Image 1: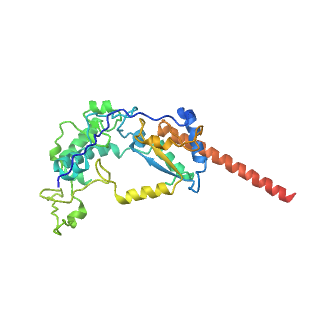
Image 2: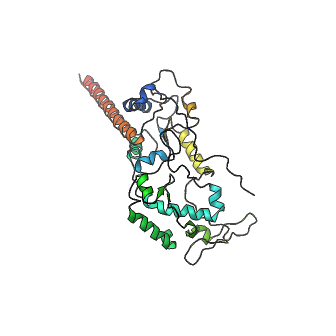
Image 3: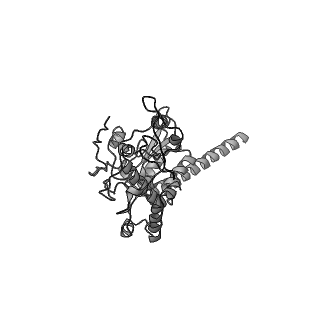
Length: 327
């Protein structure tokens, strides 16, 4: 059966109209911190638990040096002609997989050096506070190992400046891979799925698929299965049922939802703010446009102070009660 051509255009290049700041006072960093503090400290309605599930996108990691898909206006900003690989292309096209793995091979040398930023640490701290639930390729590709060595020697992989990377011959893409102009992508080799190589999967008719590797361990034709795929959801790929179920269960068992995405708006987000009580100051919902690596650590500091004050007041009340009992 021929796969249908995806109708979605990716990257999305039109401007996304951002929604309003909610509440209006949250347009500044101090105002956003105050609104989110009220959001986290106000008990949820009904019998919902007083916990928050966090939904994040790749934008949370931009401050760690990873390239982003969108600029400040919500449009695709970096390498505007770049087109990410689709799931059906990865599965059906050997040459496309070569290019994918080659670029990922180069990009990993930058990606693995990235460290958690203030936003990541703040989410961990929110969990601690109780607010949220919380080298084989080089052997197969000696020529590419040399290209990687040359790229590292040039310093192109040691800078986060896109212009300097480009000057040194590299393009960093939002998926974490690296585009090396004029690189011999067709020569790149990648290993097969080791499990499939050991025990080839069955076809619909019951016969075994053919999974072959050359003498050095690289996947080779005429293999009909055994494609090694990274544990990421590609464009056009369905989310695994167990992942979808786990996400739904997490949301169902939480009283609040915190969404952290790139600036520029998310289609359909306005539905979350339609039913808010007029004049609410963050108790029911908040929408802000602030950098997560600045906002979240500041929010954690405020919540820690709030908890400390609350505990001190509670201790004082208990001491007064104890004195009254003795009098």
